[in-house]
Image (spheres, rainbow, N blue to C red):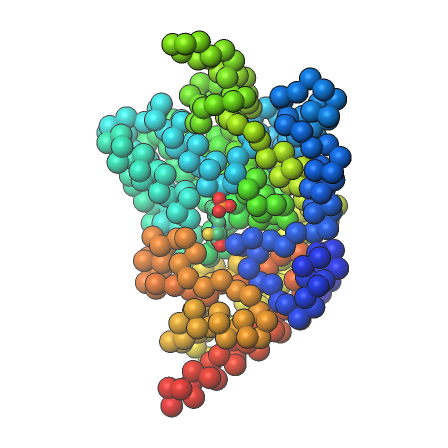
Length: 406
Ligand code: C6P
């Protein structure tokens, strides 16, 4: 199996030849092109965007603007002003829940999420419901962890204001039927909010065509830097929403008694922006475009399929979620009675990095009947040798614990 990108494109991986990095769902490694772009911004064009009349500030503004246009194009957002830069998915979803939610959700309304949500797409809606007196409802999953469309359809009605769902689950790797969910939500006059944190790095995303009203993603999960992410939204909704944060750059006029707001996207970008982060994210998008999202997906499918089959063949291994042909590059599993934290520690001694814990999805853990899982996640720089290392480490852990138990 060929890697979509070589380890030599990633300085951290190149410097640590033995490291097997299988935690890309938490954050990805950064290619040299991204690190170079960030450095180049600070070395060549660093000034506060939108603030200065001098040429350097104009250049900084231009680079920030160009980054937005590039990321918008990558995500299929034709109205570039409707692509807001945030700190990441968490901030994007909090922005929607706080701004759109407080303006539109009232006591007696209903907010629907799924049982597979990351806390970032669960807690903001839960809290909005508590604040407004709305009813917070959770759509249960099918036996293999998919969104149950029949159940969802039966839950929705004239009181439903929001349907919030993850495009790809960070635990199960399930891929949501976005079009169907959007149709169901719009059919009852609700908005559809899509958590795209695990989708944008791995699948082709076309925001305009998808029909979702809001789409959130994080740069650091798609080869970009930490601290930058996006919220894409429909112009009519964004225009009507009150600001999320207030301060510099997001205002039009500030009178003593009241203020008016800047146009999109600035209304939602209070304070000095993370321009270098945006430039880094644009460079990341450039790398993904060069590889091609179809090639990214094919590479991950091959890896996750091979890992699934080999892990499933080990006695005592339980894999959560759908079969290998139907999932994103995420594999959550448990090995007999070995605690996932112990497993991760043993794997670390084999230089294999995986995540263990509840993956910020405690409601889903309860539904799976576990307190934690181990999770391996794959990306463009992984290859068959990484799967060998994972499987060998899991077998070693099993062996060690069977001896302890004997
Ligand atoms: N999941 C994981 O290891 P932030 O932290 O804002 O960049 O992304 C939050 C988030 C939202 N939704 C989903 C589906 C996610 O997977 C994440 C981040 C990481 O699974 C860190 S908890």
